[in-house]
Length: 137
Image 1 (cartoon, rainbow, N blue to C red):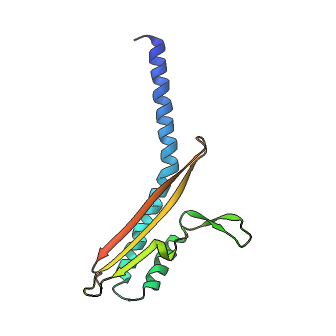
Image 2 (image 1 turned 90 degrees about the vertical axis):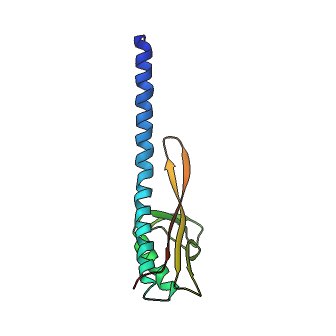
């Protein structure tokens, strides 16, 4: 194999490794945050054994996810601001209780946007954390 081909191959491999590292650095924090969301859903699920108040379960999830990540909110003037927390809504936190058994299902579905500045692109990641069954007291 000629030296020029080896150099070109080495350059292509180096660029691919750097690109993969760049993407990993941008994306991995979102998956780390998602592990915290899974933990928040678990905590709310365990709390469901003690209370029948779904609002309290949603508040528990919001409290635990209010310190991680950021989201965009629009103020009364129509200006968008980046604020801390995931900003989960009631529609994103589904709580379902069986009328026959003690089964509870809690599911949090949300999206996060990853901005890849070098590529001038935004990618949307979809996440879902779910726990169901009979919570133990």
